[in-house]
Each structure stands twice: as C-alpha cells, then as structure tokens.
Amino acid sequence: MPIVDMTPGDPDGGTSCRGMARARRFGRNEDGATAVEFGLVAVPFFALIFAILETAIVFFAGQVLETAVGDTARLIRTGQAHEDGMSAEQFKTTVCAGVFQLFDCDNGLSLDVRTFPDFDSIDLGVVVDEDGNLVTEDFNFQIGQSGDIVVVRVLYEWPVLVATLGHDLANLPNGKHLLSATAVFKNEPFPW
Image 1 (tube, helix red, strand yellow):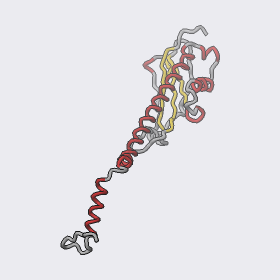
Image 2 (cartoon, rainbow, N blue to C red):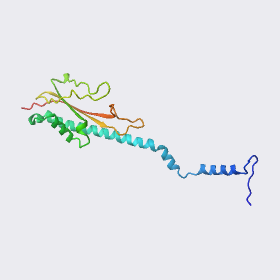
Image 3 (cartoon, rainbow, N blue to C red):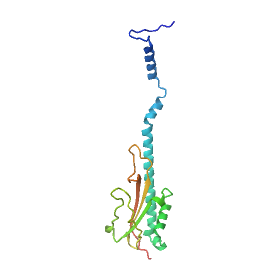
Image 4 (tube, rainbow, N blue to C red):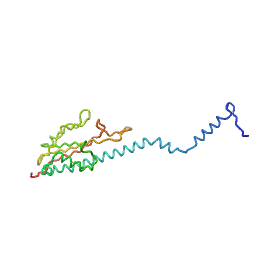
C-alpha cells in the first residue's frame, strides 16, 4: 500500500499536492516553447517583411517610370517626335513600352506635356485638389518647337497592397500611391 503524505489542512487527502507537482512539471516542460515564441513574434515579423517588400516594389516602380519618361522625353528633345508627328497616345504607348508591363497604362497613367518660353515661367499648376484627389483635366500635350522649354510629367496611381499595422504608403484618398516622373529640358535646335 502506498504511503500518502497527508499535510495538515489538506481536506482532500493530498490531491492538491499532486496538482502542485503537475504544475511544477508543466512549468519546467519546454516542449513547444519555440512554437509559442514564434507565435508571439510572427505577426510583427511578417508585417515588417511585407512592409519592406512593398516599399522596395514602390521604389523600383518609381525608378522604372523615371527611366521610361526620361527615355521617351528624349524623342521630343531631339525632334524625333516632331518629325514623326507623334500624338499624345503614341507618346503614352512609348512610355508604357518602357515600363515592362508593371503598370496598367490604360487605367492609371496620366500624361502632361507643356511648353514654356523660358525656365522662369514654368508653372505646372495643381496635381491634387484640396481633398487629395488627382486632377488631370488641365493636362496637355504640347511638344513645342526647336529651342522651346518642355516639361514632361507622367503620373501613375500605384495600388498599395499592404496597409496594415501603421505601414501605409497610400498618399491618395483612393488608397493608392501617386508615382510621378518629370523631365524638364530645352528642345535641341532641330531643323524642322
């Protein structure tokens, strides 16, 4: 017959002692500790990873847009757009060809090309209204003539995917991030 330790004041005959022993064993048990620790840090860890990835993708998209606009604006600066009679739609198509299908050019790309007599007179107006919405009604396509100052501005509303835990790259009320690429130059003295 086993000997049971009966402590004074223990009305159930030692049951609480066995419960204390189980609690001590449970406290010393380290099985699953890694899973519990990972569970505690998983949400902030993945939020940080997704925030870093989205920031990198938005930066990359902005650089791709800058390069495409710079390359396409060269067609205006050198007179090739004038010689070919390039329209706004053709110019937009050329920009879209340089962005490697990263953008939905039909639905999100806005193009503004303006000519000014000198650099001091450049005034591009408002891009967003007081509510933060993109304003494109006044956008033009004026490639100018030889020696004119030209400003090429392309805007794109980039969709933001990760907007949780305080990381939100959206700077427009529709939840998108406005990417902008601008080229300012003086047309070369081409003969036509």
